[in-house]
Length: 219
Ligand code: ATP
Ligand code: MG
Image (tube, rainbow, N blue to C red; front, side):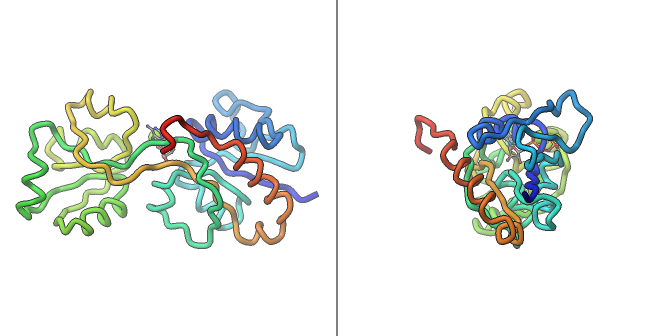
């Protein structure tokens, strides 16, 4: 029997993937929050979970370090998804990519007047594409965390970041001024594994698909 390796990241992707795994008859038998293991066994001897950084999931799957993985659309767009088969939108870890500014910054005027705005983000590719499509000139500043701080310190006029409830923005007196796109996590599959382990992977995809959360909004 061939081994199936699934790459997940700790935190919300791991937590929200559990019901999907369960639907496929897979229980992870160790808790990543308390275990130091990076390779977790499951109740199915041929299936194992590897824990990697969210932004490393596509890399693992592309190069065959894992057969499948769960990655946010943000990560896939920023990283690129060459060579990855993306059969399912799992509709988990849902949020949106948005532009936010300080409450006292007149974003509408800034973008219509054609002035250059300084945009800080971890997602510089998505930010660059978004503003290029709008014809807005931007200076991009790459950050790795705490983007909310950038407008507050004068480092940038705007940030491009993930928003779910908006409470972090509000706590920092920032305003969401534009939604760039809705984000959710996708199942990604290594192309070679898809051929070599066709049947077990097809069964997993089917089980995940049947368990995808449907919400009242239908969004
Ligand atoms: P790290 O926190 O280790 O720096 P990360 O921020 O990429 O890495 P997570 O915070 O676990 O990792 O986010 C994983 C994915 O979950 C993101 O790529 C995104 O698709 C989604 N996500 C991020 N923030 C939220 C949120 N507030 N609500 C819902 N989904 C989110
Ligand atoms: Mg995070």
